[in-house]
Image (tube, rainbow, N blue to C red; front, top):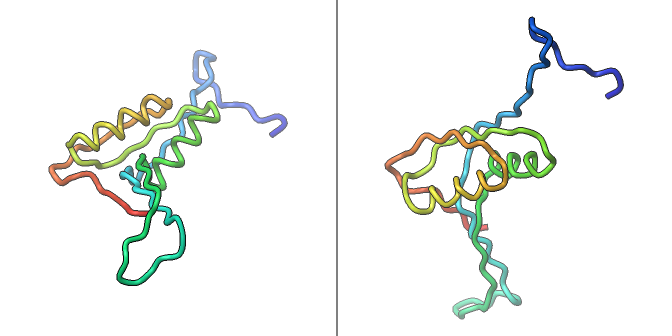
Length: 109
């Protein structure tokens, strides 16, 4: 945007803009079958796990573009939740988590 300028504080320092997303951080389990599914039979598949959730994904992409970003989320106070928060922080996302007694959400994709 040509001509866009951040508002200035009283002492002349520009305000820092931080993008904030409020929402989910879950463990995604991605399952990709190797071929067509057959009824009443096992089907080989590749399985990958990683962080997910709309708010968390948005924050990861925003941080990757170099913008300061913060995720406000509720997550289980368990090994999975701690790992997901740590992974996002390593990507440059500031995470403000409300730690819950319930386990971290898991979604099969």
